[in-house]
Image 1: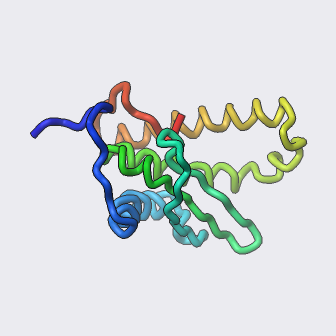
Image 2: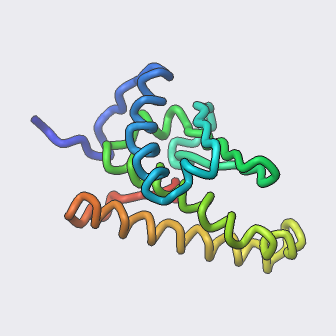
Amino acid sequence: MARKTAKTKARRYTDKERLARFRRHLDPWASFMGLSQTWHIEVAMIDDGNEGNWAKVTMTYQYPKAIIQVNRKGIDSMVDYEVEAAAVHELLHILSNNAIGELWGQFVEHSPMRQSFENGMETLVDSIARIMVCLHNDKFLGPRYVGGGK
């Protein structure tokens, strides 16, 4: 069986299949990180138009709730380990934003300092997600690994 590469045409999934595919990776990791015990985590499928922007998360803190929006085109183009990495990436945003939420609010929106902070957080979350998924799967995922759409 040929391994899927970047040039392989993406399979089209139904939203039910996409949700099940994402949740299959998300739920065990959310439990492992202790997030499923304290957060209500929803997953929604969206049409972003950008296959490279795989997912994003929005959070409310008063009643800890996170909504992970998964790009239909993005998830359809992902191989299984990329789905796992994207799920871990978004969970790490919940975990890290929970810890630094107050600091985040100190930056003026659209300021160079805030943009620099966001870029640094993306790099950190991406690196940690890659390490976690590699260790979990006991292998190096190679250059195609993309955790979170960058």
